[in-house]
Length: 123
Image (cartoon, rainbow, N blue to C red; front, side, top):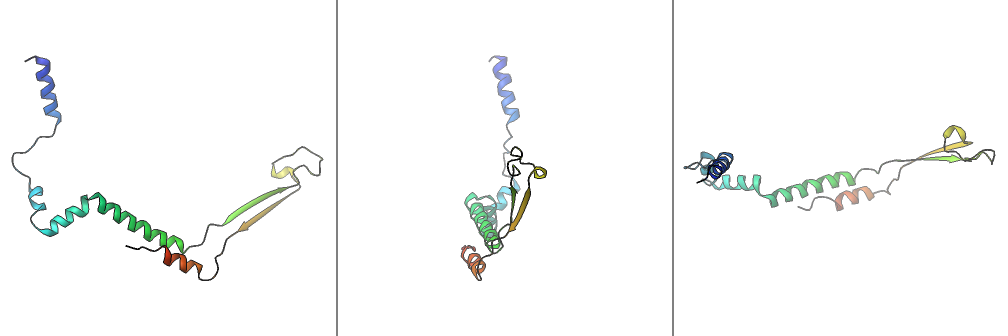
């Protein structure tokens, strides 16, 4: 054989993890009892992990559904030209007046409880 082929094969074998001739202790412990099989499935099954994540998300949505919405802040610049005396400006110091409005949407009585019950976990 050519030395380059031998060298390439040796490097591939050196980089791949070796396979032990006998099974490790962890592999034998998985199938000994049903509980160990179930624990292994819970840890490694992607479908079970996705279902668990969906249940967690549903729980979080239920808690968020009962909370109030975020407050809103509005700022209005009034008379930005000072009755035509100057060019239009968006600087707060250059306008005639400003209006600040802070608002919060409050649901009617019982609506928050209904939202919490409706969006609760169904699993």
